[in-house]
Length: 259
Image 1: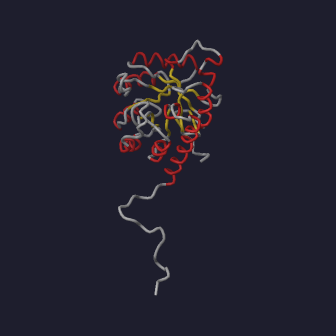
Image 2 (image 1 turned 120 degrees about the vertical axis):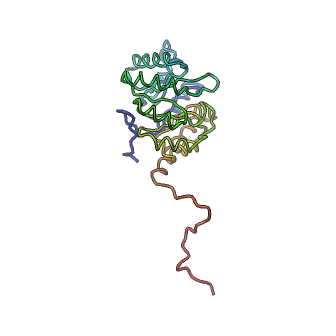
């Protein structure tokens, strides 16, 4: 729907599919996939970006001009590093947008919710539009909303796992418990995962590896775009209730009876 805008803080987006820049085999493939996705917001890991690279050697050179940057604090395992990285991003790109990641350990890459909350409080007070990566925990999501985050980003499954949404019921509870947008982040493997997230009523999906590591990233990006749009339409249309027994799609009243 042309008027179905997603609003996050003071920002508005027509596309509800957000993408990333990591793990592509080369920059031309990344650019082609980003364009095919229809995404308007792309996340960049500040700590992994080579700021000395220039021209075609710079990742930033290959990001389509229409896309807004969402810097992230990937690779941070404590509050101090996350806050420092967010401040650096603001200085580099003059943006208040930040995807906040404070991870618990390098093996699971699961978020440390306690530290994420602490960092979120600091960044919100400093005027950032904070989008925090968090567990699929309704209580944590509500606390992040209460400290002023502009959205919450619960994981579908561990980062890069491709397992899809492991606990749709928690995602449903998060959607019911918070008023800010809910963006599923991490664990998406294929287009059907995106459709399911949107059918659950999520406001958007952020993904990276599922496109970047696909055999054909550009084709997968197109599939993700279509799935996101289809899932959103299905949610807005309202699915039929599930029933244990069959129900005839054509009524039998008034039909010709046999002799």
